[in-house]
Image 1 (spheres, helix red, strand yellow):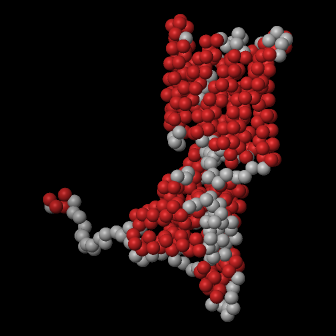
Image 2: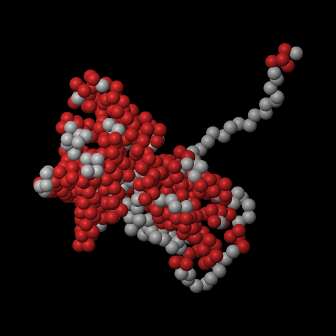
Image 3: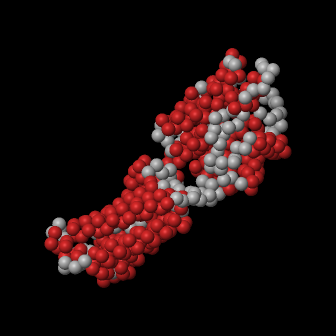
Length: 497
């Protein structure tokens, strides 16, 4: 799903040329789909197709349709340029949006012609845009797809589309899709989304009955059946196409994030079995990150998934990390500080490589390599100082970076350090926890770790308070239970004896 950055990237002349060219190409593709629909609707008769497309040999109808489609495409360009310019800048995003529209046009034409006009999946386009881009764009693209289908139906009027159906589709498509957007938004269970198909079917059925009441009286079962078919098809086809778009266009949806944080996913299972200490640490960090993301308006589910995988690189050498040593021997005791540093800092790059190897989303890999930024590995730096009289190059004992590039990465950096530090405190009172979290944040700010992301001081203050409250709750003081000597409890039969 796309999230608009507050920092707009500066456009160059080639960016305008490339994005406009993509819109022109896809506009022509949509126009060709109209021509294909005309060809199919005349049962493949070239003469009939020419008469339908060219109005008896004249170009007026075709020229009108081409101009109208171009205007709709231009309006769509203006929308993205002014509302989501960074989204528009990536060619893959433009292709994603248009491919959704093109597939939906094709499916609605085929289903309308060969199944029933009112069985069309009217809400399909809006649902896909909602889950793959965002809600605001889904509402806008609902208008776009309704206009395009209205034009297509007008273009094919007289074949299998009547004037009544044409206007009915415009009303049904617009109302059904809006309802679907608001019903499905925020729902993360595929089963619940599937059940929404029954609800989405109601406006299709009601509108078709109201607009064609005379026909409904004659064939009520037909209108009821295909009305509900429309709602279910919208949801079922959305579920069918969603993995395709996720894979081809590398889009991370909430459904995908939920699957990635399932404990049965491949890398998480390996982490549980090989590095249980790291897994438990990641669980706490995920809770902190999710709370912080919610508090500053970021994607909480994305923050949670990034936290699960931020230390996945420790799978390569789990025994070299304190949380996995279980009080046994420390292998670093036999190594030089320089070699220990290399092993410790390698987990950031190893995590990036593992995530890429298993073809997981790029955002997870980015956070894995960024969550320590260019911080100093202080323990081994101090240890190395004891073996030299001169100064040491601090870069030899620091992570390679890059620094956090997003707010999510910054949240993981703070939560990761705060959880580790608070866990070592003997007194975990709210005051001491707050002090520890402040020290973690100040250290990262002193090392200029947040200079490459858009996080603000206000965000950092909110994150500090959120983590402090959460960790004070996780590591709260417990009541010391008194030691009691209780003998064996006798059964009722023994008591009677």
